[in-house]
Length: 132
Image (cartoon, rainbow, N blue to C red; front, side):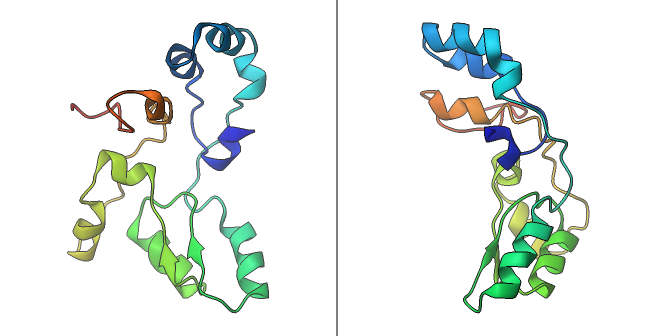
């Protein structure tokens, strides 16, 4: 299930609208079975990532539910050399710099995942929650 990788809401209607007619129809018909929702939680892949970290000696990057500075610090303490952020940076491109400068509040991403269907748009991938 594609949404397992992202967690949060499954924007079925938005995906359907971004698809060609036949796929749009299929998405409206079977979208609930195909795009299931998994609740978002901070660092949602941490347990699985720690199993990999334990077995490998190479540098690794943690990815999966990073929206806060304490999460970054925790996974780096866990032994990950890098932390990747995706959706959080779509809504706040300057988030990493702000966190480095002392910001303590979490990122503004609400994990609605409505940014995902925008990969098919002429405008390119973007957060639909901020004015462009």
